[in-house]
Length: 176
Image (cartoon, rainbow, N blue to C red; front, side, top):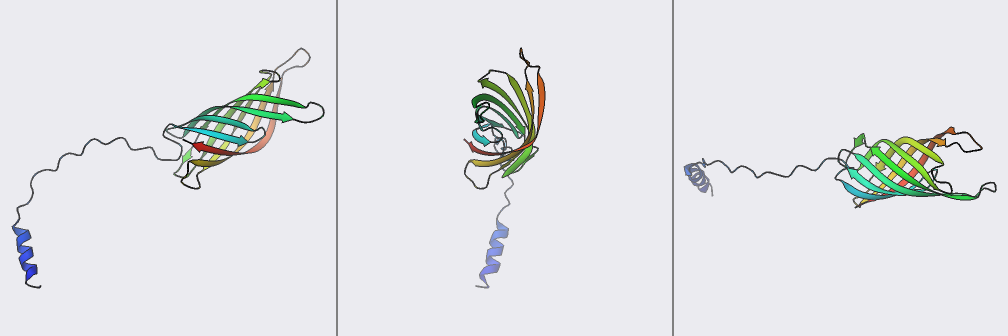
């Protein structure tokens, strides 16, 4: 066995070196952007906050989320006892966009449709947090928002601007 080793070494040394250049690698597709929020992926979200709402949208490259949705609110007090339907326009920018979590500022705009269409306008800036605890395409989210509600003037009332304190919210998303 020990005499085979020098023979193998001589045989390897006797082989001519390969002087041909390796072929240039083929052009590769652009690398997928890093982070959880990317890829122009469509998603659906159910949210519970001051008002429950449902929206769908796109998770764009760069950690940007844009969405449209609808919400339903019921005020069961004896004074009003009304059901409201409203539209939701939503956007987020994930300042930190890691593999399994992302967080950053958000803005939600709420426009009521019923019982009185466009009687008020709500701006809700806030902070959103998303977490993917496992490899399934399900995200768990939380948000802290403040609400600025502008109520239009009517024949009997003047317009008003109201501010509410921090409102927590929980969200569940499915990413396609």
